[in-house]
Length: 162
Image: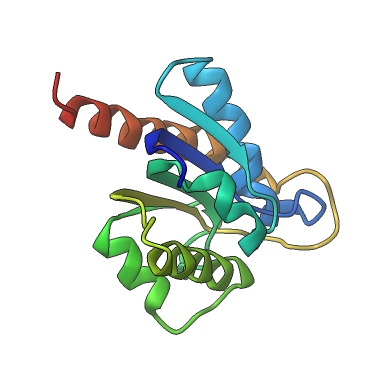
């Protein structure tokens, strides 16, 4: 089994479908805001799949950024941490990503590698039509989502024993 390591920020989405790629686009902002740093890895999870689990197993803290159906205004950003994330993903499913993320966490749970700390940074999409750029409101939300992801990583690093 791989050694447990530091924190992972996982951007999820299809960048060919406008706001569907919000998680991947926000991941780029995380890289720009945080820069290379020990204790943090960035991973483009694309449209998810069980095949990526081995690459993620060594992390005991995951922040996932994704376009998430929350019935809010387009570009709204919301966060869900630990069991709150589990409850959110367990509600009647509304998007393929949420199903995929829930399944990925279930697989991690089955192999005994559920991240000790986990959070979802959701961005309410406006349009999931063909296009490689997010809608204006989602584009404006990307730095907000990135800052929220970085906030979780900072909080978790501060909680670690010295």
